[in-house]
Length: 456
Image (tube, rainbow, N blue to C red):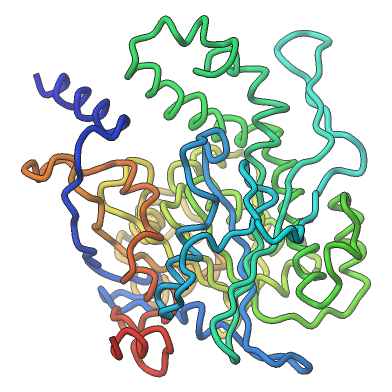
């Protein structure tokens, strides 16, 4: 009976037949892996990361935004990061808080100005080919990712520049569709999908065809090319932020070529930050760890140092199961506490796919065989400092609850979709992202976003 109820509720949720019961945001704690204490973690926030550089009039922070599983196949979704940029705009009481995205890389462009959105395609030096389950048959990608640039001007002193990196549409069309596209509920494949019961058909697409297939693909050789392309996108974004526009870089550039260009120049840019969703968190973390352990000093190291990465619905713990290896991993470069990058994992308790990072690393430490042969289960501050240094990142957990009820009268089941992807729709959580936290509490001192909220 319980199973039947869950299926009915899931089906009704997917079709929007039930009105939600709004749940206010609750921040249970902000914990740091580096600390024995509880609810004493902190981070700067985007507004405090914004900095001036010579010759620029405004304080600015550059944000690289990487999406998660199954983004572009779902035509019902808003433009990628529209909630995020809109949430920032609303925090500053800007009137034009909707329709901020003037998109080119998204599935449905809408830009009434007629001005083309700045963008660039990243590819390999030559077309990328993969062998398949069919002997002798290969799949080919000419491009790997598309990146565009969106600018949100707050006032005369502050602006946010968002670099959105799209990998999903390209890989779906060129790799995944050949494997599971015969099954989704679109086009000619409806002669299979159309035979299913309605709600089973919707669930199959949302959970597997457009969802898990992304993660499965990433954990194979295609994941290496996605990471290469992200590194290339970072080099291109750094060049653009230093004044060398996408147009001057070229319409399509290889990741090796653009990173060689960036490495041979002295680039002065504002601080970079990173915002990731779902699978994008694992991709970004892998890229960063590879950059910090390759023994080379590159533009990637400069962009990562001192950065903050806001992971919405991270999948690090779950997908790190794929990192099990019998090879010795390369050590992470030593970075002092002042410049050590920080990861802020914003995890809704009721999200099926997310795991908090502090208990993940504590559990891994306690259950593993370590070189120092110290099998004590208690992590004191000294051991925690060593653990953070070995990972290369300071880890901060925000344990949250905000997912709306599917049936207002039923408190024991909340919307799993909202729990996984509703972070940017929470105004108070956006204030944390903008103003940061000190000792486990929202920082409301000298932050324009909170000052404007207080004035209301």
